[in-house]
Length: 453
Image (cartoon, rainbow, N blue to C red; front, side, top):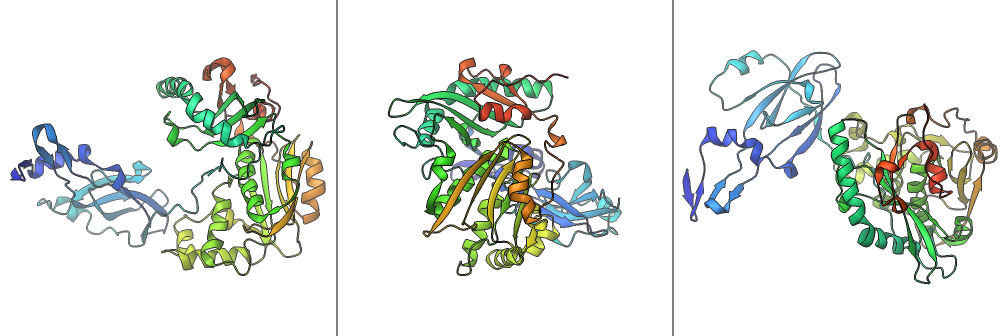
């Protein structure tokens, strides 16, 4: 050990190596994707680094201690063994971890392992993981362009209800939520997909409303870790009245972002139909952001996008010119957007239709607006239909879109969510919510229907 500025600095190599797990810094972890040197299968791995660990009560510092080494893995596609040079190979790993077979340090005097693995190939082609095209976030704006306004005084009910949730309701919810998380981890059963919160509140004019929020289920009750979206506010002005009329492009796009958040929870399939994304005078950065604002809010498993031919190419070119890595390279490492890869291009339509469908209820936003923000004005309409067949015949079939036989989808049979309802004291054990009840609870304000075998 040594002394520096009145502190003890531990520098014993064996001790520092034994302490690495304690001084590993998750904030420094780098995720990387590479190609198997034998079959070009995409491999994902992460590199772990350490940081100083001060112990002020002992006037001691355990310093960061990073060692270069080699990690050995076996490709699950071709079963060949490969190696990759990496920092802290004993802490770093592959995803999935079962790929890892061995490791060694470059500083080791024992050359047994370096000799053993001297003839296997090394990953050469790799890229730091960039999830900008696959990350999903709701980004719900509770302050501007509300979908839900008070029918009596036209106040923004989104901001009022969100403030109630954060400042007055979450404390009671989080206590029950924490208890459920502990039970869920102990039981090792399937976890909920979402948490749904329902509570009454009063508008500033005195009118009572019921709000329904949702978030992905996370194993934490910390409010900041949840991205809430608003499903409905009962007693608000009908959406068909709020959205109907002439509005700016930005207003309509903000509404669409909010509807996409609502639709992702409620409906089986979502269609985004727009001849153009952006406009010919939009700079490359804004064009990319326009695409990302939509892609980040939709579920690739239930969303279909239809644009005119050339629109996806324009996006990929703009993305490549405004980022450190090209879109083609992102695709090579399975980091491209599935939605972009499966984009359906058409040239013979001018219709702008944004809709969500289920068997017995569909919501359609349509009008004159392409996917672009701006100050100029466009026409918007909002319609609710009572069957998928009607929505298909009126809006999808004329555009040559094939009828789907996946409504409702089969992959949601095991899905369930938790309902934290204030009238049940936010008790999650009394509020299991299944997909077939999502619309009845969020649209009709009913109680969940039990699922019978």
